[in-house]
Length: 138
Image (cartoon, rainbow, N blue to C red):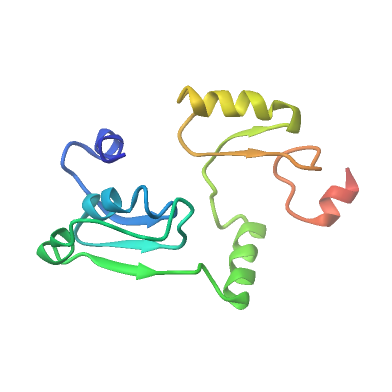
């Protein structure tokens, strides 16, 4: 995981902020690759909630740990508005039809997917639909 980050940023060049979701299995590396003065934001623990890591990297390099549950209702509505206004780029690299889910999984398994996010259309006829009205028009 750390090596993959350095392949993008350059050997030894750490990142400003890490958004940590898996928790137990990846937190030690997330804490390590955040730069001096950087931050690890943890918002879940899908692989486990017990975090074991070398704490020296936190205080030696003055890193910060922040817990987050994403947003309250008002903030979530504001985030949705950013999407509706196209002010938020989800970095979508590929969109798959429901029938193409096995192909999408194979791409991920073989690490052949493009950088960015992949999505699957669920009851949508095409990518880019943002509202119920758009779906009803098609």
